[in-house]
Amino acid sequence: MAITVTAGVDYNCKYPCFHAAADAYAGNGIGTVLADRTPEEWIELCEAGLPGYDRLDKPEPGALLVFHYRDKLWHVGVYLGCDKFFHIRKNRTAIERLNKYSKSLVGAYKCQI
Picture 1 (cartoon, helix red, strand yellow):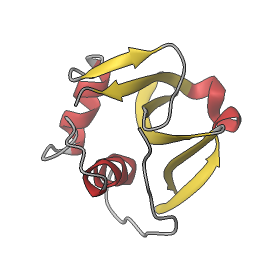
Picture 2 (cartoon, rainbow, N blue to C red; picture 1 turned 120 degrees about the vertical axis):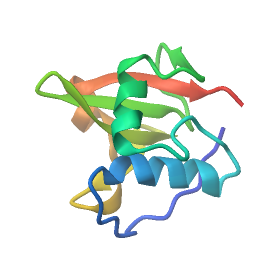
Picture 3 (tube, helix red, strand yellow; picture 1 turned 45 degrees about the horizontal axis):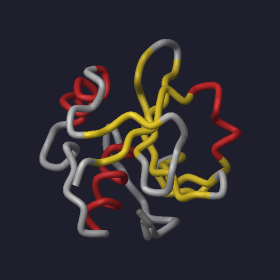
């Protein structure tokens, strides 16, 4: 699944990465379990293994990436392919190389459409 995203968008909220991921999926006509939930509920869903998603052995384009920091799930992004992913960095959308963050990657998940 190909995902089209816009880099450089400003997100000024408590958990901007979840909003950006939900917006990226919604902008591509994909409903997700992230839509219409509070950030706290999103974190609970991630910790529960993301019902509504299939865990992947390796990322594929369109996969939701979940990352940890200090043993807590705290960040998500969307895999674009070719070792690149879309996420929020300093409250702005960014496209970066996944291998830079591979040690903190918890898993990649495919949305069940």
